Image (cartoon, rainbow, N blue to C red; front, side, top):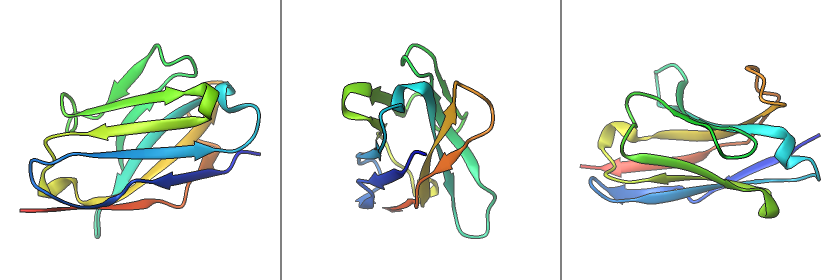
Length: 119
């Protein structure tokens, strides 16, 4: 069992930056690939970024490439999402999730953190 808690969301002006954190419980954090998704009101959930258990492989959604960076610190059981050059269309609830042994299905999800970008 892994519990995920996101933090770091908030209100920021367009062009600004935020860094989200996802703290995981349990001793097997590095068994999991970690990912971030987001969901804006009235829209489907959207893939943002994913990082392998070792941190060596990273993937990004097209809308955030070049602006967002995913990372992790397995010693701290924490994954991060650095978001730069934020746009109003980045406004959403951001969720982190974990896929055991790097599978495609996400076994655990956090409760989400709100990011609001004002124009």
